[in-house]
Length: 145
Image (tube, rainbow, N blue to C red; front, side, top):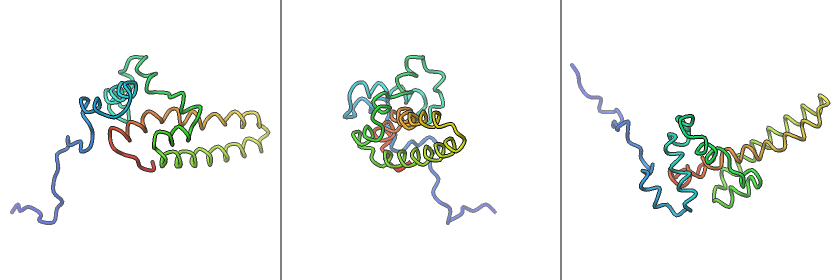
């Protein structure tokens, strides 16, 4: 006796991508050509998790791997791009981690190393900026994390 469960949630297609834009839709976004090229590269790498990152050419990896203005300006860059939630959350996490590491290193007598870790916050923002802006513009996600 096989009967359908009346209380089961409806099934959806596995390949349903919801709000994701196709490459042709990326070209219609209100961003510069430079960002559109980055979005196409991220899309070719498999989206924000970049599962096919190593298949990209070295030049393409550089374009999406590090964002120099985000390294220099950190949370201010995120605010300028309209990603204030991510700016707050990344800043708080980086500040807490940096404070903990600095205290531990100072107690161990390695204050110089602790001061060098100040650049780590900029590196986190630089490494995440392109992916986070892709999530905001292409995937329409602007969440806290």
